[in-house]
Length: 384
Length: 229
Image 1 (cartoon, chains in turn blue, purple):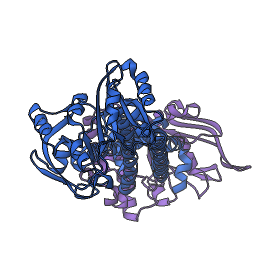
Image 2 (image 1 turned 180 degrees about the horizontal axis):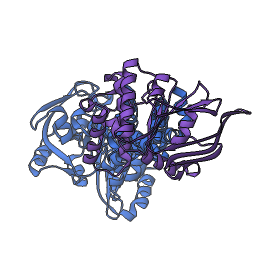
Image 3 (image 1 turned 30 degrees about the vertical axis):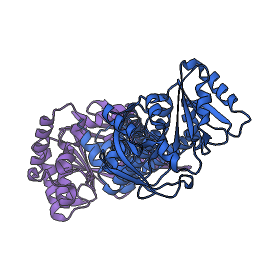
Image 4 (image 1 turned 180 degrees about the vertical axis):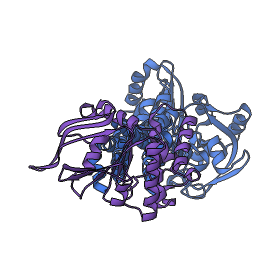
């Protein structure tokens, strides 16, 4: 501890340089934690997905619809307990920047099948009874300052749903009971959508509740077989596979984001290492003086590593803290949305801080070795 | 009894394929409590001799005994510990750490000891008091004059109460008045505190303050002068 002040004062020697090094580590840890949050978000959705639910979409692409008659066919398959459906609305609330999921749902069956959508019985009843009612996630309510009873106007974003604005009344606010349910979604009645859509009785996707999760593969195959060679062929997967495929639409995220994170960390390592080396080179005489005073090489080594560590940890703490604030802070509008479970968790903070420790140690390793191996007489002669 | 006992010490440096002799078979004995001046022209080997005595350089040949320890055979780590205990070094350019206050600069050697914070503070304030800078403990080197900086450097050299004080041109970068103050201080340390001092200098006036003066030329001891001091 008695050397702490010495380390601190050495780090503050060139305030601008130290601040820039701290900033570079902070940015690296911020990016790392944020990118990990994206990956973790997708994983969390897949992990929280039910194994007793299968999702059916058009075999060509999920952007194409299917007829409602599919529901009766699916319901008739042995092992199927329940069926519901939904459509992606893609509307615009005031400004295209205000992006959030808007689903037209078959309300009763949908809420029955998703007990993770937590809503009070009173609000649920009010929603079910109002054809133009909406059930809104609490995250969305906080974000836009909405209240139950507010009228919300949404402009259709897909021409198929017409050109006239849709007016909804918020009848309830739900909370998310699991990572697979986003708390920033706007749910409303599919019937309201269907009345004004270009073709009646069209559904975006079906969700089928199974009696036994072991039947998932078999029933998925049976569903697809039922509609084979029809104009509306389907592709059915478990909810987990569906989530994973949804994520994979964006490419190999793990590799992509992992590579970006690694590149950032390695670059920061070089930047920090170079800065430390420069700082030690400038202090050659001082180090020689300390060695003359009796400081062993090992103490000099530890002092330089300590300085690197301190700078990196401060940067890491700032980066991790900033990531928590920006990503998790709902008022800043980053949390939720496209990835329901998007957030920098404690583990990511710990890993981010660990990473900064690693950057600090590795960046200081070469300068510390240089400093500890310094020949005192040569170093003193260089200046004298 | 001899505090320093150099026997047939030689030192040469290698520059590429060339071997450059700096000291040739120097033999010196310095008793405890002496104040010895080392004079000689540039390149005569006096600073090299001081570095060998400080244990920051190693002889090519010969034996160096300081305070009953044969330092030429000590390992690097042992030598560092030995320096911390026995040597106080005063540089020509003071070499204070610019980001540390006078107090912190003087405290630097004490951080290697097991002294408590309070004990360290007492030692530092005593040392600063001896050099007459007790009121400048919070000043940074840039806030001190050259003479004051050198006095802080002397405080740093004496704070551990070392066996031997080594001064390499301690007045070489000072004006006459400051140089006089520093030399008076060194004399006081020798006379009042019985510190053994070896001082390298170009300046004959500075050398006059020493008890004995040795002359080196081309790495060889040429004469020993009894000073008037």
